[in-house]
Image (cartoon, helix red, strand yellow):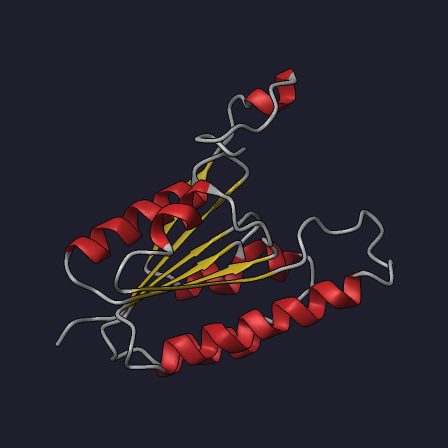
Length: 176
């Protein structure tokens, strides 16, 4: 019986989602069925989605309203919370579903850190699926300690230098 794997890519450096999508490519290469849930993101023109969404074996959905308002008290925050909660419900369903071997929860930690969703339901779902053999990959800055403890593999991306800080805008293929 395969063991459940929980991997977490966090930190302030670039490459968290990139590493996760590399793992998705590996999983698909092994014939695994995958579910990708993106929190916060709402742009369906990003390169990873354009590439993966049309491949057999991948179900992809975004649960976001895009960039969050700077003011956490903004009335628009409720729209972000509603979208993220739908994403959390979809994530929990995917973790429980036998339809998927690989579940990628992109920008999950950001949604948690912005208090868009609660952590406890996710932790419970991860615990209850311990014998499933499912691979769960999560990304985002500022992973909560409880999520770090739940994962068997954690990588922290550390920013040394970033083009955005030098005035270089996002571009296709890099997508800051």
